[in-house]
Length: 240
Image (cartoon, rainbow, N blue to C red; front, side, top):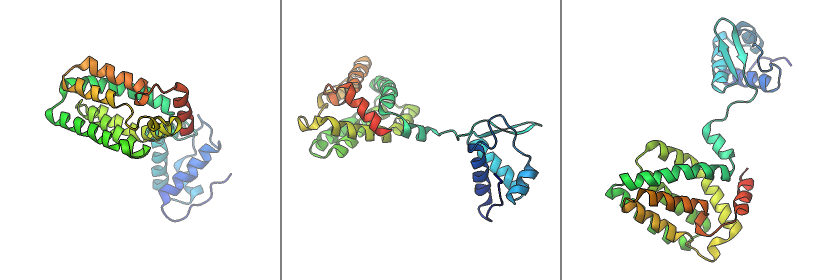
């Protein structure tokens, strides 16, 4: 399959797209060396500098890798997914397992590091969650996640906070679907309130292990309603 010349602009993006298409189509299998810059430039109808930038873009996507003195070699036929993309494709159950480790540790740290401002934020978030009991599932989940974000923030660990923030879109989608599937709030619009109140109390009292255990138990049983694992699994399948 000949490459063919590209249109005038933007040349680098077009050249990278053409080269990527050749790689993903198997024209240059993994382990093979790409033609030299001069050859590629001639086939694409662009300058060598354009080819060089296009190859850098492909290297950034994890498709090719230059070897000093040997040329540029294909190392993958599919671009590497970035972290946010991988999270969006992840099953809710997988995200939940990682979330548990992050939030349980965050609760433990929050009990040791919380400030008066953190306590105020958590108490306000708890009240907002209670106020959302009269709203639809989406609004209630938003309030629930905001509460958990306040606890994570009280840990004063920016890495934990960043990771939790990246999980939020997947968690939100999964939890909304979970509530719709199980209809938990039909019987208890403010489901899980006691566990959330107990978590705030443990953090305020500085009881690190109690806070960790309360949160661990809550995450093992979403919304504190003895949700069957099959429900979570179905939700995860629906998120794929």
